[in-house]
Length: 380
Image (cartoon, rainbow, N blue to C red; front, top):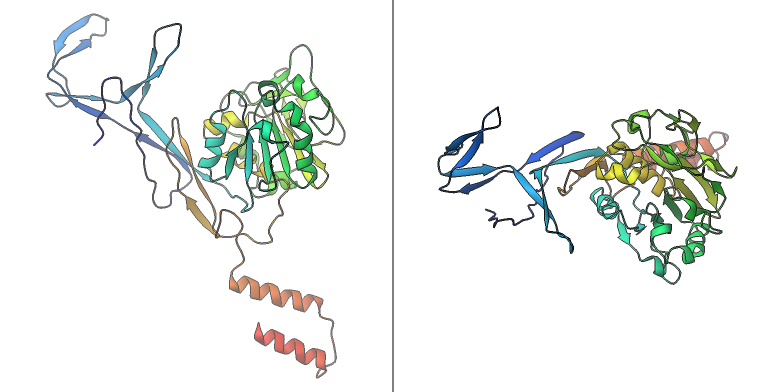
């Protein structure tokens, strides 16, 4: 039993059990209050019909709406009604076991880190001022939030440390920005933005064409198809570069608001032993809207520099926690950690036989190499 005072709030947790098929599952909450009061019923014409007892259980009032309160120093507290409902999105998602993400937040992305954690991604906030002095070897990836270079003063002076992280084998993913990205040393190769207005794709159903379907960014750990770009919420892409260096490899092609085709939505390049990726797609907004395709794509980008395993198999379910306006529950391969699976015993045996058979040259029957090979096959 949860007791709510007037204008009060409580957090309610739901435990997800079992395995659910992929899809969205709504959760609704209703609060029943005992009261000896009446309610006012409005007629269709808008005039009060009088004070009558509640229609649901005499002596009780059931409410399925709540209030979101916002306090300001210069005006009175503002309260907005909202439905007391939520949803859980079950996502077919695979995560590499060595994925560890350092998130550099901006000023408008409070949910970016929490949404990654819901997906099972080990995500850790990091102060931009620490990038130049902290040991970053624990992380596999640095994710820089939208417009963080403009909003966080300490980020630009540490741009060299971010690039050095990529050169040593890490992955750097920069979500969209603007002219602040043109400063020397921020990006490994130059890009250019249109002036005075940026190129955008605000229509969520804007056509997208995959240019590099066999690229590891679109093939591992999750295979990205056209279906992953369906049912997007809000703008498709912001701050699309008008020009970009030939060292960048475009991944997808998109139609902007002027119906011109551009390949600048995802730009990836190698930097030393790592990868540097600029993303103009509104992936952070899609995470908040619990879009499964955007979640799968972002995980692929975050995993760009990780080694691809030889074998993966076996589904599992990662339990998620309900959050406002939906949450994720991940389904993917099982292992001791989230991510790669070692092949089963039968798979290892067959692989061993195949390797031995492919690499061993024919020898005369009865020779010593042939006898040793026969013993190895029997042992396998």
